[in-house]
Image (cartoon, helix red, strand yellow):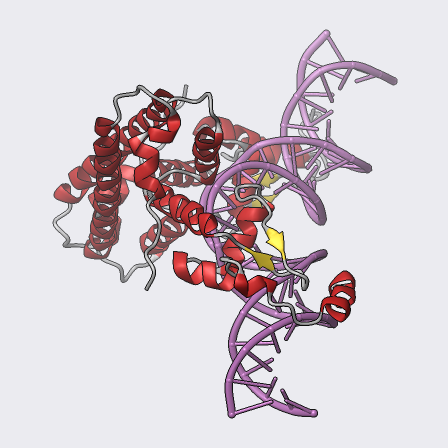
Length: 156
Length: 156
DNA sequence: GTAACCCCTGTACCATACTAAAGAGTCAAG
DNA sequence: CTTGACTCTTTAGTATGGTACAGGGGTTAC
């Protein structure tokens, strides 16, 4: 901010920022559909590289940043964690990386998701079984759902 | 050791602890198969009520505590959050609660799980579709998985 | 009596992914 | 020139479910 003030006095109102095809953090956030805080958070955690600044210290994002954030958003919707997204972004940068590398990541993720689905399905079946035993009548003390959960550990 | 026939109150504390059917936190943890820190954590968060203490300030758990912690453990395996488990435990205590109340909770949870499964299935399908488009050959720059994710947001 | 455990409190920390607030500077419109 | 919207940094808090000390004291077996 000190440097910003100094520059501002010298270079007053040259509209470098608007003549270039850059966006403020707010515009980017709006275009992508996320919050400005989220973008700054991604920058802090290294997911997004630090953008250029204008004379006031405002972040200036090129259009690619919007593409990158859209990428992040979509990958997140696909269930990738920020760490995994970071790996995908790194692959994208890596000239030696091949399509196959990306495919491996995607397949790992698919296996991952399948595992989660299996877990949830097992949970659901267990719960369904319990609710089928419960007629929904009588006091809670006789509820088969709770009594099933109450079963204590046996003495060794 | 207590000597002779005399019932020494000061020395009887040791006796009282062992003659009653109570357990130290470590024993409980072992029986249930969780850590002592976890039990203290449950107590801190109000999931478990504070047990009696002996003269040394040690927690003394009745056998019911083991049942309760087993309940918590099993409910957790079924995908209930600690908050939801707290609600189930409260229902169990509530004399006015009925079996139907428990059933409602279980059914809500089932719906919840189904929703998650649907979400994951959609993710999986999207990813599978992308990987089917990728032959795993060529440079990363031409990977259809990444290019699909790269699609930018259009101008409004 | 002394080592090897156990238990106590309190605090801080792990990961994940943000979100908010304080306090100050910047910018464009009226 | 003022106002309001925007931006900056730093710090701290949210929720979830724990885990890991530190620095004390208690208990047990030999």
